[in-house]
Length: 582
Image 1: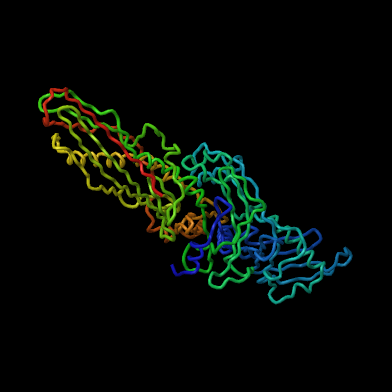
Image 2: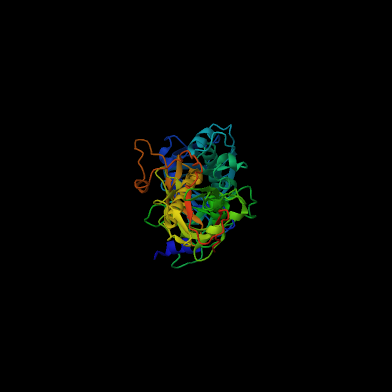
């Protein structure tokens, strides 16, 4: 990992104090506006302009795609909007005197005019005509309760322009009279109103809800319940300098709280490291989604995986001792795998995970570790289970028998992109169950049928199979918990597709996002290259619990060691040691 950008991204970034953050580079915002421009009708105000006033002033021309400048040097404006002319002309009066008809005409060819804007947020209610389309694209349950937060640019009706982002094809606009400049600004206000009214200044649309369980029942702590906005500067990790407005890697941030948590005031994401790099040749480095480790691990995954800790339990039940017949007594070593009488529910605090060290996300009976950097958000679960059995008989045929064994369960999962552009947690390879040697002992005063060591091996295999059958309980939550987290809709009928997925050093989940806009007229929609090798989305299969089965009994044949004529009695005890590791 010698790439300075990746070193900074993996080693330094944090979304704290927010549950999630979506960071969009200036480049990706402008790519979305460019796609909107390509899709627009030639008569749309984003493609052409024709404005005239009652008193004879006029402006007409052909436009290039609008662009924005993310302002990271002061707090005057969050964004500057750039009005880009391909060609055109403008005629303005030189005075406000209605009796003076003097005008001046300007050639607008290759003009770029940057001006301050405000970011405004509106709610798209379920009654809005566009609501149903967004809902369908989001793939949420039919009975979901949510609104859509629409972020758009609104022109600030204040004098002036941003000189550093403007050019007038050789003309020094600052030398034009205040009256000329004021009349030009009035025409600019008219154009921006036309753009806004046509939905042509949207930055993005994202779901927001105060009933998150209706939107994602598998992970109700994930859907946004509040969204704020801020800017984030680019600093070259190899040569960090003070922020400036000349970089396409300056970014606009969606700052998200979930589970109805109170957002920080004022909204701000403190600088920690480099999130995006718009100049990188790799796809997907110019936008990213980050989910805070506290939300991903403690808030969702670890509570879910407590079912694994329950699955490793083996609950002894009353043994069976049938009366002595013929050559011995029949002993049944009864137990129920995956259950615990004292702690029957997986959400019992007994099964909680607690923070670990040395790269561990958490440990309990099951140890969880993640791999920072990727490729893929890899995490491994390793569970240990030790079983001890003691079986004694008293009387004339006194005997003592013991066995113990340890099983280790290893499961590897990868949070990765799938072929529809989303993220799923998929198991990598088969569950690995390592069985230790079964340590057995029995006194010379008893013969077991089948042999005691053979019986112990069968007991170990039975417990391992029972654990495997429990894994289907959380399959649906793993497969569908992250569904739709990348659903931010942009101008140009676009949304984001997930590219690289990884964990940073702190355990925050990072997902690079690549803009995916609709194909312009006359062009075919193509599958992005980075999805060609992505595995297909998996869908959960119905989970049918395996009914507990009684483990076969065995025959205990005592050997007389003294005379006494006492009644043969048997006693069996089985104990499971629940190990807590940290």
